[in-house]
Length: 72
Image 1: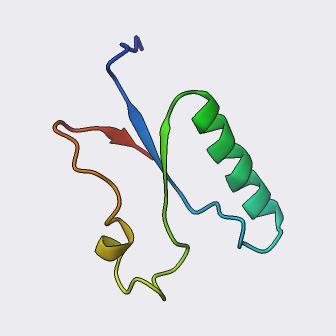
Image 2: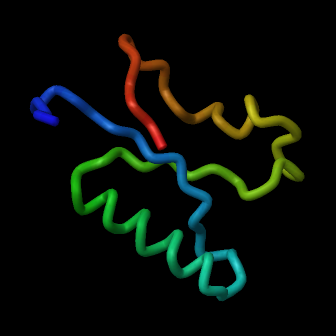
Image 3: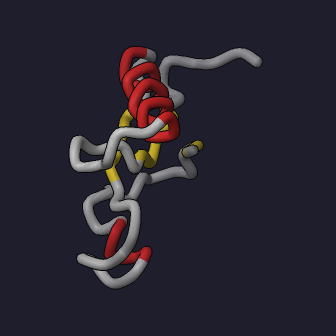
């Protein structure tokens, strides 16, 4: 697969400093840091919707991209 400079991948990450220490949290943090080092744009989302209510509300800060953008 050939990637072009204008391609961008966005990452939705649950990794935050408030998460209790666990193997899963450590892996999530390492994957998030690796994605940032590779130039991916990372957006943080809550692990649950207690504060924001819905999934749509959890994504309020992610901009609308003018074209379809790959994300994980």
